[in-house]
Length: 108
Image (cartoon, rainbow, N blue to C red; front, side):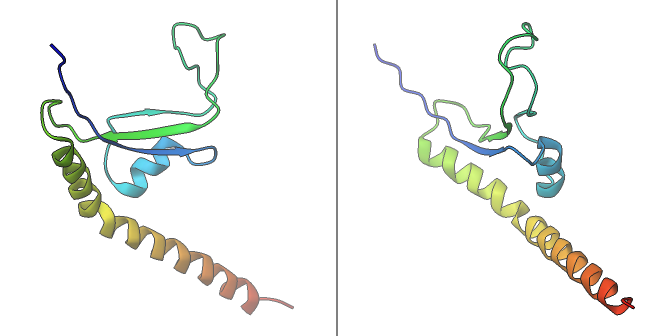
């Protein structure tokens, strides 16, 4: 008998941003995360090395649940942290602009 299963996950992959920064920015812990330049297989440290960081958030639902519910659950999680992400982005932009203004005010 063919058993059906479903899962869904949000994956953020980067060559420059660490999983810790993604976690701090989103304010949510990933299901799992992998840092760039770490062994793909911890049991074989001299083996293949990761070329990018990965941050993964799974829906957390049972595999017997419909795919639509897995996706809905992820969207709810993301939407609940979207405000924090937007606030972080605005704060970062404001800090960058204020540094530019501050530097231009003190030119000789």
